[in-house]
Length: 90
Image 1 (cartoon, rainbow, N blue to C red):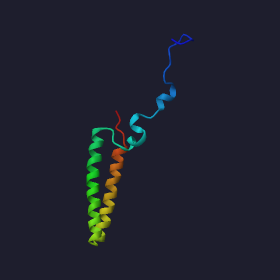
Image 2 (cartoon, rainbow, N blue to C red):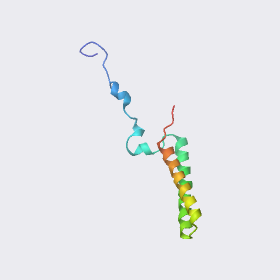
Image 3 (tube, rainbow, N blue to C red):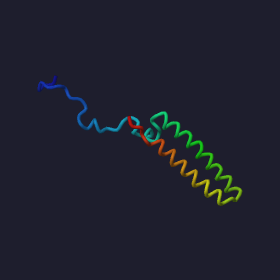
Image 4 (cartoon, rainbow, N blue to C red):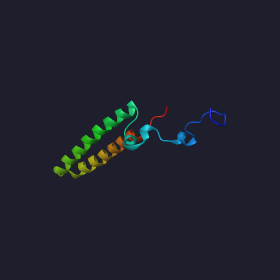
């Protein structure tokens, strides 16, 4: 009880709008659920492999293949970003 005789208030209205623990700092760029971790890891692996292949294409002067590999690698890394930052809804 408070001095006015009502219930003790905790938090307040602004506490409802505070970000959750996994949406602050570096953790907002990491996945939250197991499905997001799985997609994050798989796309990171495949995207990294494609980017390494693009470097070998550039070294061999296969320019059309290098451009395609860089574009696909960038698309895979964008998927890594999406899997890392998207939060699952309950």
